[in-house]
Amino acid sequence: MGDLLEKEEFLKLLSEAEARLESRFSALPDFDSGLPGAARAGGVLNEVADRLADNYPYFHPLYAGQMLKPPHPMARAAYALTMGINPNNHALDGGRASSAMEKEAVAQIAFMFGWETHLGHLTQGGTMANLEALWVATNLRPFTILAASAQAHYTHGRMSEVLRMPFEALATDNRGRIDPRALEARLSKSNDIGCVIVTLGTTATGSVDPLPEIVSLRSRFGFRLHVDAAYGGYFKLAGNLDDEVRSAFACIRQADSIVIDPHKHGLQPYGCGCVVFRDPSVGQIYSHESPYTYFSSKALHLGEISLECSRPGAAAVALWATQRLLPLVPGGEFAMGLESCHRAAQAFADRLTRDGRFLVPFPPQLDIVVWAPRAKNATEASALSQRIFDEAAKMNLHLALARLPVRFFEAACPELEPGEKEVLCLRSVLMKPEHESWLEEIVRILGVATDRALAAEK
Image (cartoon, rainbow, N blue to C red; front, side, top):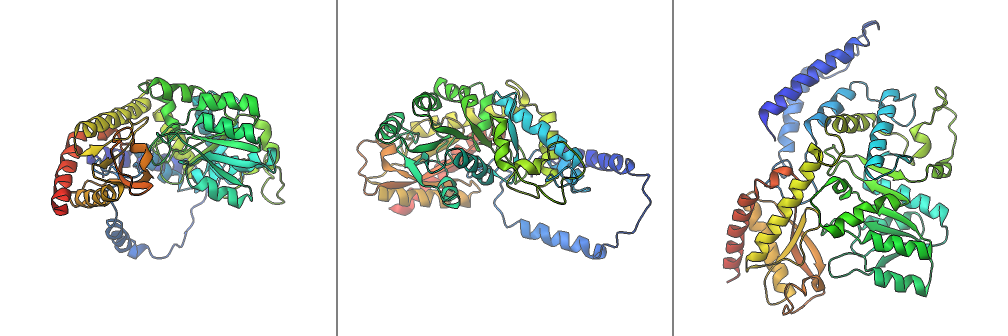
């Protein structure tokens, strides 16, 4: 679970910080909290530790499956320190310091995207953040359609149902990105789409929608533009992306709203999402009053620009502390970690492409790699993917599976007989910087797992 010396050092620093915080309240009289169960706490915590062992090793570089990344020790320490007070960032009454730190941390994220003025706040995660962005969009463009790529996150369709708005899945190219020509034809036929959701880093393949072309279409058709960068947003700082991807991130400042998840690449504990709006005046849409919470300050309470009420101040403090330690700047330590993840994905895809047993439909744009084993048809490839997945897990290499359209593989293997419209693929999210140095071991284990899966097939 990480470097032992590093953890011990952070625990020491946390203990010192807790003593410092307690000293600031030393003028208060002592009291007995009367908390029950202290004598039995050790046994319960040991039981918790035993129960938690029933998990995949998300913290280890041999976990190369889903979007799970351990929080930075600074985030863990700052979160734990804050829990001694347990502030609520709904109103300043419940979290003065943590609310101020949330505003500062969110402002740094907005500035990363090129916005000096903005309106935004943290949420419990990307689903809630996207819901807020789409809720604002439907208030500004009522009785219109919400539209996103067919490869966009499934929650967009679900949130559209919550908002009682029609949703439309937009056609994609063979790399899982919105097809601008198909979108242009759709809008020319009927200009009834009120908001286009652009994904910079789809969760299945890490594909980056062509934002410059969609911005150009917005100038003609007038739809609202929301960018879901929950997974990929921090790659705005990476300096080693290809020109196509860099141009998409360069245009992100032209969006109307952006969502990013600090609990993915931002090194934060779950749940920590963030939504930001380019135009602060959208705050009027949130307008409401409370008879009992907004009494201590005339300044803006975060609860006045959020659909959520109670929100953990500890999440804001952890994010603020992490960004204080690792600033969101190109060329910095944080950005170099992202660049390492991208290099690992590129190198992994290259190794897979040169291995005659695999099909890689397209090179990774960020740090997600998808591939399938060569087979006569999609049905056989899907079955073999499952066996490789199972064999790799036996050797502690944990991958992921994803169902993708067979047409994505046409360029890599035009002779593949479809059999089905979709194929079950293998997928890896190489989102830990350590993945780059562990790539040889990952490739070795995958090779052994593939040999075993092929042998079982015969």
